[in-house]
Length: 514
Image (cartoon, rainbow, N blue to C red; front, side, top):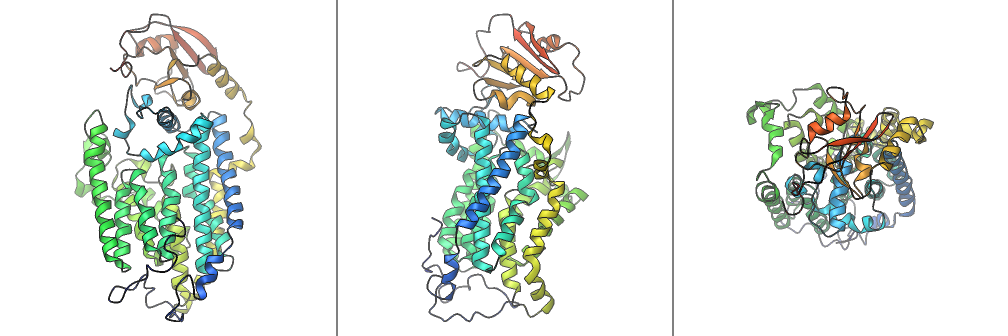
């Protein structure tokens, strides 16, 4: 589908707005009137070799997976998300409803976030039933984005710009932080958005429409991004296509938040509204949320670095409008985790911004402002240099450190010994440290999040960072589950494994149809 609409039949018709009007600063188009992108002088762009970008993509995929794998092997997962997604994919792989017990016994994950696209990972999970298969899939999807972004840049700008942008994108802080944050569903949005932007830049508007449609299956907020794609198609002269796509995006966004997620949620609502209208226990009005979009230096820093990694040339491209929906909900949120440069939230912005960089450079090369035309000549290598320089403060720098590859330290050995003490097929309540290592063949609950289940095993890392130190692990397990009794089965280092000594309850929440 990458070559959809290559014939040029999507060019603007007489009477419509010109497609991608480069504006007053751009050089005039000297191409003969009868030339199309596939038959005129620009045909050479379609002959840009793919092999160098596949090689670059393979290297980036290896770097991403290497980092993620050794973080996992050292029991360093930063959150419960990897375990959550493995439980979801494991359910799809078994042709079951996507129940994620980590979120609560019998919890249907589509009532939390609407991401049915992760079911596409089921075939990979049949072959490789482990959380590491998800880490590899994400590394491959991020690297695929680099291939698309880099080769498209080469087609547009020529020279060595494509490989420079591949490096800049591949080392960008948004991608690196997402790799560190383990697997998330947004990995699918990265190459899809790259393909959407590629199609827009190459004036393959039907392809842009088709590539944008699956975005509504990645996450509930991306319907708004699809609507912006429709708006751009409308402005570029594809008025009917654009209007229909924008309407579809708005309808999908509304239906997902108001109908689909509440229907799957046991609470009957979309829980994440509280991220905008509540700050802790305090209610926040929408007006206060809007007025507070730039009320933090963390937010401002994020915005500066988002545009700064493109040498600020992304501001020259209308593609940058595509980042507004995602930035909008993040800046409105009262949750500080959404504001900054960590976690995975900025990964989907990277392909948009770097292809906006390519578009901005193209628009500026023929500018009547000499300083802008001169700057356009160096903007791409500047962006690559910024990405390389920033990497010394970003996750992938750890690949240069020998300790990254050491998985035989005392803590890791103690963690593996604790895993060995937990029988396959058992129901386990645990914290983040062991969680993603258990989800492939056990039923796993979040510690304190499964009342009444009397799990077979309670396994905890005493150094996890509890609000109050746990002095008596067995008493703690029985405090969590007063319906059962436990005994110490294994203790090594900071890891403690307790097993239930009383019979399993006749009724377990989330199990046996409860």
